[in-house]
Length: 209
View 1 (tube, rainbow, N blue to C red):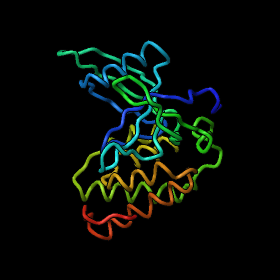
View 2: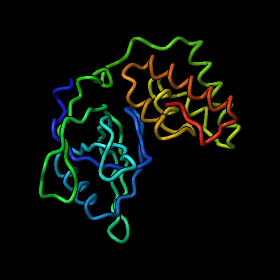
View 3: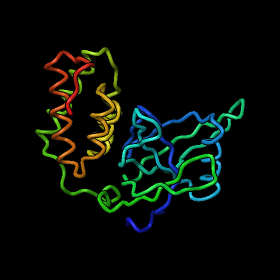
């Protein structure tokens, strides 16, 4: 399955935005370079990568997520509104030098080919219930609202990835979750992070490294 995806992809580096396979990310595109990126993707295979920028210069994290443009609307002032649906995570191997305004990278999907398969190694129900309880408690502490009825309609992987994406935790911790290869390891790490925030009264200055 991993061989079906392009090994050279256009990438949108964005600080503070991390998304996961089987989740949706709405984006409002207005910079010329990323308008070019989206337009080129629409003409080709609708696939583009998202990766989190590091704080220093043009550096980016090595692990990102390939997404497919599932919705596209051209708005006022040449803005473009898209919805990006997460497909599979990738590991950056090297940057491709080009004459385009946006960046392209050579990537590998080998570590994450399970993202596109039905995962029969589901997390134990007891662990999922504990994850939901901790998430609800943290959301309540932060005054955040989630439509739990709609959330419960998602499959287990979507639920875990959605919590990882929207939980009120640091970007570094979300990146750590993105890099967790198996759904079991991701769930264990997520539980530890949520417990840490609950124990420390949700302090935003303290994070798990």
